[in-house]
Image (tube, rainbow over all chains, first blue to last red; front, top):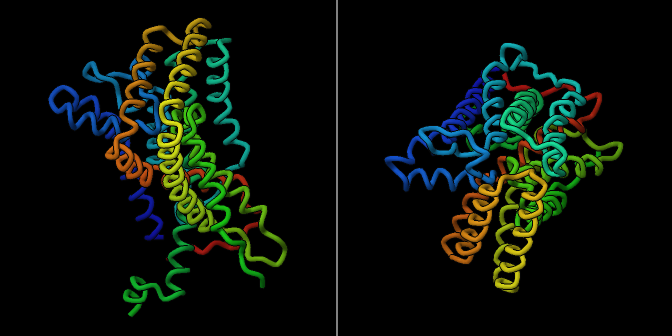
Length: 168
Length: 179
């Protein structure tokens, strides 16, 4: 149980760091352009970062676009409140069809925009991204906690260095 | 009892798929949406791995998803870098012109349809040209490999965990939770 809490806290910390980085890029841009450029580059493999499709802070675009921001920040929020509606000690999985429902609005929004039937707006990007990001931790946290616990016990059973020392 | 299927083969297949999706011009646009190509590679790895299980084998566990995601992501990062370098070395200038013209035509069409504003299209054109200019530099290649070696395993693990949650056995064995 303690181990699960520790893993959860590390995951929460890393996600918070990831989200702070998104806001750090525009915050640094005015006074530390070189540092801001490094932060923008770090996020560039994952997002197009088109200025017109990003939220802005201090008149500079965020590290990622509106949809990606919505996904990451809602992922963080969902993770933050996770222990309130799910137990860390005995992870349980929601029905697998809920994830399809969570991702469907985003896919439809992208499809409609790409085909030119209906252009996506900042609001639709935010809402659909938020839905997907909020649902993700419900599916990812249980196997993550379970998987790390399994790896620890497997490693320990094989006489792993760290655990062998700890056991002595 | 039989042993679990070998993860390396699946990781190699899905890693190459991740690398190809991330490096082939045009296809790589998939990764513009939160590394969707890498996520999907992780999900695919989990699906393919689950197909390898037969009766008499130990059940699929979430630790398998972690390891498979990690391995696929690492293979994917190296494959993407190798494919990028190969494209640059073998068909560099031709490919660059091809990408420029393809992206230009695609953007013109999207602007005509009203799905994208013209200033955004111009920004995208500039970004494509800038990335093409920078892509050949050795420091950029190693920098890109460094970033992808961090990011791809993370997103691939997330994809594999999501895949596990979707494709997991209906009657899983009792979980081994750390005390």
